[in-house]
Image (cartoon, rainbow, N blue to C red):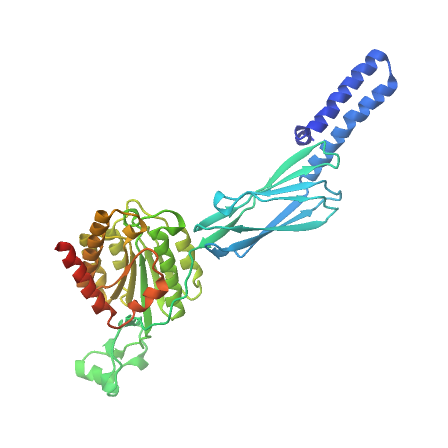
Length: 432
C-alpha cells in the first residue's frame, strides 16, 4: 500500500487534493453531500494504489533469445512472455527492456491488459555491428490502474546475454602444408613394413600387459621389452592472433584488428571442419583447445570478446605458444611488426612446425602522405623478408583484401617463391 501511494500519478494526486478541498468546504458550509463527494474522491486513488500495489507482485516474466549467438551484422529475436499470476486483471502495462547502446535504443511495448492467469508474448529484434557479449535486460514494467490514478514500476532481475561473434567467411579447400602428429608413446614414427622385427618397442613398466611383451627384442637386449601403443595420426593446427594495440590501425568494425579477428575465426572454423585438432592462442592471454564436444562455439565466444592489448608484446605471445610444443601447422595473424619482432617469430618454428603468417600492413588502413607511405611500405617489406628468411611462409595483407582470395597462398606450391622474390625486390628498391 505504501508503494502504491508513492506511485500516485498527477491525476491521482489531484483527486486527493480535490477530496481535501471538498472536505474543508463541507465543514465550512455544513454540506453533508459535499462531504460524501470528498470521501468518494479520496477513496478512488486509495483503492487504485491498493490495487496496483497488490498486483505488482503477481507478475512473472520470461525472456528468450533466438539465437543466443549471432555474427556481426545479423539480428536476434528477443521474445518476452509476461504472465499475470493473480486473480485480478491488470491495467495497461508498458514494457521496457534495457539494452546496451551497441544494440540500439530500448524497445517499449504496450500491453492493454492481462486477464486473470493470462499470459501474453511480445517480440522485438536487436542487431549489433560490433563484436562482444552484451547483456539484455532487466525488464522494467510500468503498471497502471484502469483510471490512470496510480503507476508503479517493477524491474525483473533476470538478464540474458547475446554473444556477437566475428564474421566467418567460407574458405576454399586447399591442401595445407601441415604435418601429422601422434599422441601415444611417441609423437610420430614410420609404419613398420618389414614384419614383426620392426615393431617399435620400449622397456617394460610396472602394470604393462604381459601379452604386449616383444620376446625377440627382449632376447636381443636382455631386458623385458613391450610393444608401444598404436599411434593415432591426427592433424594439428595452432591459430595465433596478435593483439598488440600498436600493431593495428583504424577504428570500429573496419579496423585492421577486426579484419584479423574475422580471419582468425574463419580459419579456425575451416580447419576444424577439415578435421584438424585446433588450438587458439591470442596475445591477450586466451589459450583454447577446440574439442569435438565444445564445437566451434568456444573458439568463437573467445574471439567475440578479444580486445587490443596496449601492453602486448610479441615476445609474450611466442612464449605462450611455445608452452605447449604441439608441432603441426601454425597460422599466425600479425599486425605491423618491425624487423626485430619478425626475427622473434623464428622461435615458433621449433618441433618441426610449419608456419604460415598473414602479415597485415596496417598502415594501409590509414591515409598517409606519399613519403610516409613509402617508408611504411619499406618497413613492411623488410619485416616480411625477415620472416621469410626465418622459414615462415608469408602472405601480405592490405586494406580491402579478402581472405578467400589470399587463402590459396597458404597451400603448397610456388606462391612462396614468388613472394620471396617480390619482397626481396621491395626491400632492395627501398634501400636504393
